[in-house]
Image (cartoon, rainbow, N blue to C red; front, side, top):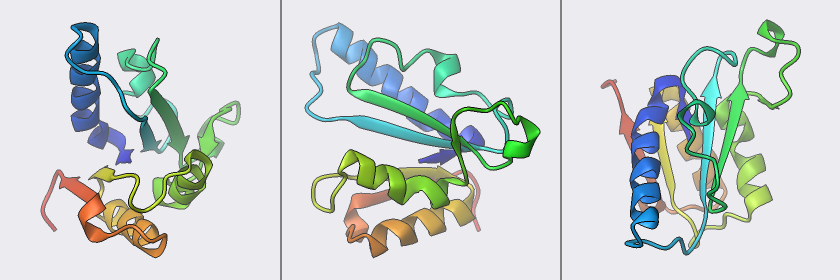
Length: 135
């Protein structure tokens, strides 16, 4: 899960996995899901902009916007990352003990997502964070 530019480390990881897969060094055993929150559809780079979602059935990119009134034509997910994370975790069947979470972005979002996942049964060791700025 990421907000705005917090997507950067995840795009780097996904690009690395794609290169390793193309060279035959890695084969996906599971799925990678990236939930990316932004204020509006044009407020930051996206996984789609980077082209990392194409032809990789092991990867799913879901953008969500927190200010849908900015673009009433937006057809994607609406809501803050912390408000939609459990919906997608449930949809994907991400269960404690079978998945890990990586979070980067706004410190408040990180705390809120960690709380949502912990309430869902995820152990602290399965939830990792990368903060761009100290609190």
